[in-house]
Length: 319
Image (cartoon, rainbow, N blue to C red; front, top):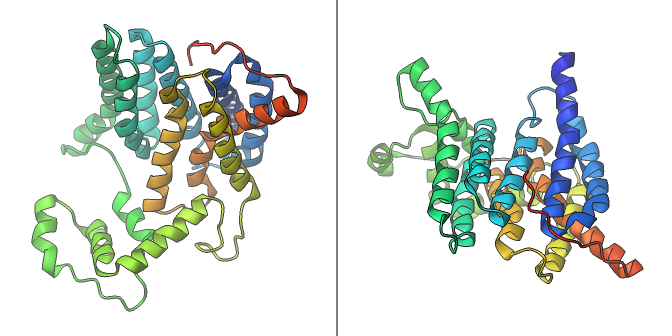
């Protein structure tokens, strides 16, 4: 397995470079030393140990970073070539983990709004959507060839949804009252049981979601007793808030491309909280997209201390 693990190590380094490029697109080329330092430290501390094992996020995380960088580039330089590349990367990212499809609901309208003044904007959006769906449809094609059934994506959604939302001991879950509705909607098994749990005991269900949200924010203890908390994750999202605030006060980049990484990170947060974190490897993609904002915060601190602004032209170069 040396070749596989070596490739995963290379992808860790590639992720640091991609995060640096995202920060440069959001803040300017001169931020690269700070962005590279923070990105490298974060992936070394959090991503490298995960990449040392099999069955991890070593493919998904660099694809997520590359896809996000390409989408930002599409906002800054909307043309058909960039739209094609962004769509292909988005499709590959969705194949690696289907939860990234949630981001399309946010990203496509945002990019449409960003490029709406362009004469060719319908072609740009159509190319992005078509390429994303074409690549992602390879999963459905494979499933149809193997099973002769239309299954758009192979997923463990029902099992993981139930696993992350176990009803308290003694709570009776009876599907009889709404069985007809579930059958009409094509919902059954674990998914139907979880929905029924949310209906029967909404307070308990919401409290469990809250504990999972705290876990995803780095406060492990309420959901996983004995785990404590993660100072690194807490520091990243706190500094990301500061970095985003500083970036919003700057006219360097338009609001939509600036908010794209945050929007995608939030969709990952929602997906993890809805299902269950299963340890650090599933919450790591959330923080990967917050690291560029943390780099902006570091750049702002250096500027205040030295009086030297590390902001130059924003390069609309490709991802």
